[in-house]
Image 1 (cartoon, rainbow, N blue to C red):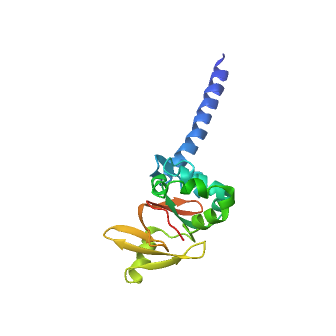
Image 2: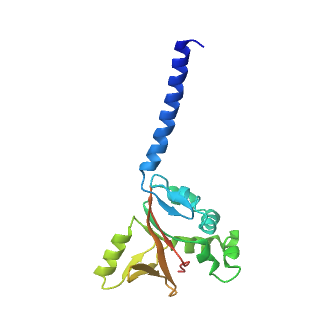
Length: 189
């Protein structure tokens, strides 16, 4: 190989590293949050990130069964209160298996959309609403009913229509089309 060929080959290798490095550098610049052992990238949408969390396999399967993938990949913005697999495991035996059956799609959709607020609300905004409401804030879900938010010490909680209380365990997981707050209990309309 002559000198010119070696320089050209070296240049091509250097360029390929530069381009791949730029993509990696871009992802490194994003402020990620770890959820379920995976980095959640603000440049990805709700579904793209949730699919990478090993703690949200049940939620992802339920979203697919309800036909909500396309909606949660849309522009939004949405605020999603995402129950973990452990939260789903708290439900009575057979509940999840029953809900993901095609004949129960309407009920599953109702439950899942009860976990979603239209708009993007970070934890600071929810805390401010709770403070302004003298200790609680009511917010209407995409499903149409309200959730009640409250605080205890440094923790943010949400109570559903049935009185179930969920603690926000990871707040402010930013997405390209909204924000996710991880919760420890499934909410029921």
